[in-house]
Length: 255
Image 1 (spheres, one colour):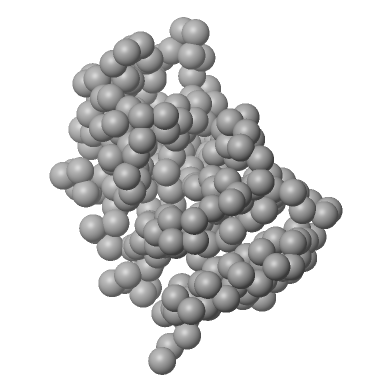
Image 2 (cartoon, rainbow, N blue to C red):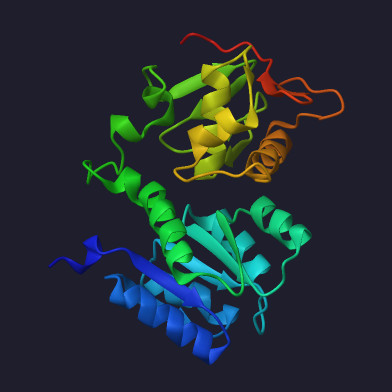
């Protein structure tokens, strides 16, 4: 069997018993699992053997989980699960703003964690299927999945390239979007001028159940606004309609 086809997880946890339990649980489910007990060793480990999803404890010796999440997100679209013993909404929001995909509070249900990891893996590994040369196929292009053709869209001087995840400003400055940011902006571009509720947006960017308290969309909107230099107090692109959702007000070029 090709071991590269087996999803590879990284468990970063300084508490030996918790780390051993997580490693054993995911190995029993058929995953390849690497482990580390501190954040300082993670980058070297990833350079030698890239992983699909990293489970990061927030409280780590050396670099903490939030710092690791930020560093990992600037380098790749790796799936990031933050694990913490604190039931702190601020930590959760900060973690999502830094690029984490999932936030889990100890004590957690292993089967729930497994389900969340499986959903995350589907999104992380989707671009690798059916196109070994380019790493993409039409079904994984968020714009084409919304019924449009081509991999580049333009709006008011901005350029979004779905193949490279690059968002380029009218001044020529480019920033790479995360997977979720790309899917959210794709939803906005495809539905420009229409009000989209948080539930509708969440359905477009998440392959999992949502709950009414989920703040993922709000966090992603905040991140997109920063990259678009869009002032929420006087928005040019993403308009908040309180009690209804969001509206993308920019004119999108047809080509």
